[in-house]
Image (cartoon, rainbow, N blue to C red; front, side, top):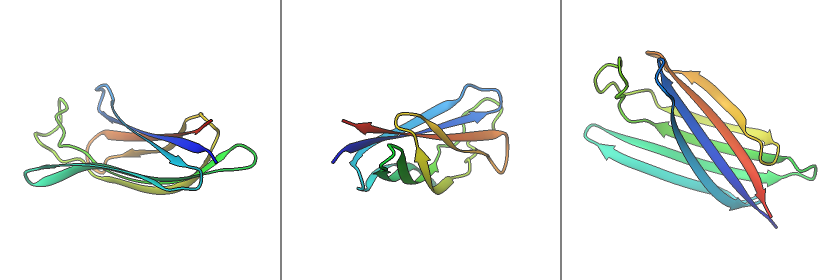
Length: 128
């Protein structure tokens, strides 16, 4: 029986501005599900970052992780962005194989409108 530390990092870039990074860390047992919910309401909409992860340590040492997350960012305050422009939500579900302690880029996406780019990275580490 071991615990697994899952770190999900979301980097958001608008234009040539420095990236904004959001990180969620959760620890769960091998073969057990873990969830983190973080929400905040503003007039007219709700922001949130929700993560579900289910790691399985394989006999060869790799870690298979089923991960689902939902990211609803705050209205953009970046220079050059329209005032209070609401960026698109990001919802992803995937299963990947990870090397213990080594980050893997899960996805890179572009906003349907504008020049916002979002990169999602996950790292799984077996805690001994």
